[in-house]
Picture 1 (cartoon, rainbow, N blue to C red):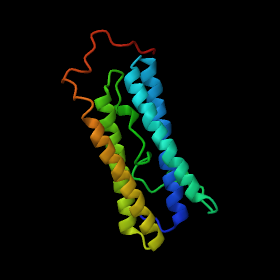
Picture 2 (picture 1 turned 180 degrees about the horizontal axis):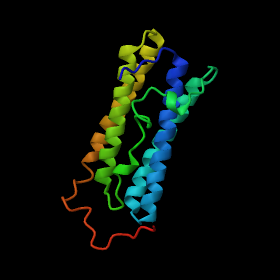
Picture 3 (picture 1 turned 135 degrees about the vertical axis):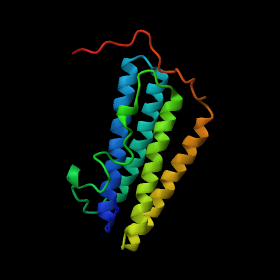
Length: 171
């Protein structure tokens, strides 16, 4: 799918939504982890949500004075129904570890970087190209930071998710 955005306003609308959805999704997952008393993972997801909030506020600041369009959820240019920076909550597990959190965060940050890179490559607007390149660079910095964090958390053994007494699901 060719990602093409040709106005700064449209790019900022997408960017603000990406950061908002990233923060919301991280908080949803953090809440679920708290429910399962997996506090270390919940804290890490809340930290990531805070970073997304901060980045979203920066996008909002850049949008001041511009006529940012409302985009219907089905009209965003990402490939599926989720923005490239929204973590896949279906890939979570109540026993996941901080290692898994970082793998998930790396995936979405790399997806956001690729998204902005595609915009820079496909846009015909020099201002959009410059902004998309700047945003791609920021996302690549996030990838590098998360890569540094990886060393803090060892990869769990292969049976990390084994549970002889799993939680009950209500029907």
